[in-house]
Structure formats: C-alpha cells, structure tokens
Length: 265
Length: 47
Image 1 (cartoon, rainbow over the protein chains, first blue to last red):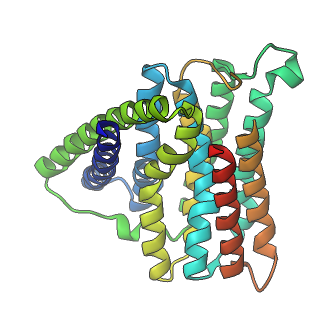
Image 2: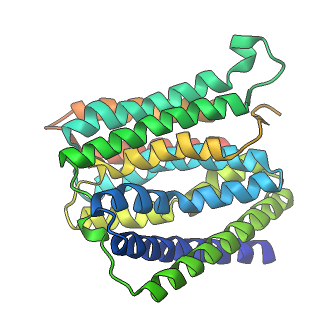
Image 3: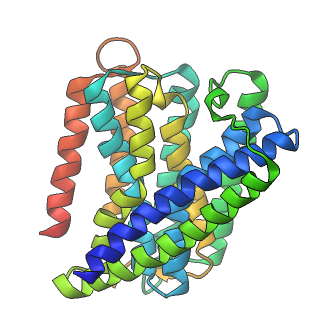
C-alpha cells in the first residue's frame, strides 16, 4: 500500500516539478535574451522529457537498470501507440511534410539504431545484449544531430512552436521555480523508483515490466495532457511534439545512463 | 528485445498510417488501431 502511495506521490511531484522547471527556465532564458524558439526547442522539450530523465537517473544510481530500459522503451511505445492513439481518436491529426519525411524517419532511425547497438549477441557474438558507453556516445551523437536539425528548423521559421511557451516572471520567482522544479523532480523520481521496485517485488513482476507499464505511462502523463490539450485546440501535435519526444527519449535518455546494462537476464 | 521490436513496429506503423486514408492525417480508426495494439502489448507483457 505504501508503495502505491510512493508511486502516486512521486508522479504528482514529478509533474509539478517538470512544470515549474519549465516555467522558471523559460522565464529566465527569456530575461537573458534567448530567442523564444530556442527556449521552446530546448527548455520546454527537455522539460517534457524531464520526468523520464529523472526517474532513469535515479534508477541508474540505484542499480535498477531494467527499470531504466523499460521506462525508455515503454515511454516511446506509449507515446506513439497510446498518446497518438488517444489523441487521433479525439480529433484527426494532420502531419506536416517535415514531420513525415524528417522527424518520423529520424525517430524510426533512433529505434533501429538502438536495435543494432544492443544486439551484441547477434552481431558481435557476445554473451549478452547490452548498451555500452560507446553505444551511449553514438546515441548522443545522433541526438546532437537532431538538436542541430531542430535549431535549423527554428531558424528557417518552419516550426510553429513556442509562442505559447513564453512566460514572464521576476528573477527571484524564476530561480524559485527552478529550485522547486528540480526538488520536485528529484524527490518524485526517487519516490517512483522506490515505489516501482517495491511493487515489482511484491507482485512478482520484473522491474522491466513495471518500467514498461506503470512507470512509463506515469512519466508520460505530461505529454498525454499536453497532447490532449493541443488536439482540443485543433493544433497538430504531430508537427513536432511527439516525434521530438521520441527522439529525445531514445537518444538522450539512453546516453544519460552512464554504465552498460544488460538486456537479457 | 521484444520491446525494441514493438518500438520499431510502432514507428513503421506511424509512418505508414500517415499515407493511408485522406491527406496526411491520422484518423480515428488508425488511432483506435494504435490503442488496440498498445493494449494487446500490455496484456502480453503482464501475462
């Protein structure tokens, strides 16, 4: 019972923390003269991935590598099949040309490159499949290319993002939001990892399955909420949001787990 | 590895579905299919 409470409290703290972090960081960046488009593509995009990121860092630190892997893959699968499924049932989603020919293929490339990087048994004759530091660096290089692409897109003005992301706060309030956000993220991430591992042990499911289901859905709730809100306003969430989230997840979240970990038990 | 295959399949389906039907749109039945596949995937995971 206490584990479920930990999990719920963790998700609440995580979501509030991510929101406050984005608000504080956006406001601060705006005050420092950073263009809105850059804020949208960096702070806000990272902010929506912050819940997954923090949970993965906490799980990595605690040695729960299966939870990390489950969370990253589970979030990606939930983003496409779950979130896009729900939102396109509410209202048809129009997909822009750039998204069709660049962003979705890039996210597919991320998934395929992950497959090749972890398939050490098939390709290298290793004893088990794992993601090494070198693999992580390769994923990070892909991620850098994606970031450069995002910046190019923003400079060409073909992205419609960020106008809604501008938040004006005082310096003091911005810093306060940053601190509250980071504290909420760290505390929430800790509670989720603790709760998830306890639940996995209690009901006899593996950490991987808990990561792929409860944790990945929970950490993707901000994306779900944002997507539903966007689709209700008849905005195209597919024009950049979802594919960006997926690429961020695969390239960035894998990299931040610094040690190799095993896929097969 | 099963999860990685599902992840790749989801990406391929997303790409394919954009070209099926009217315009470059994801419509309700495609969303329903996505959600159904996700639910089946969840059932396979926990069973």
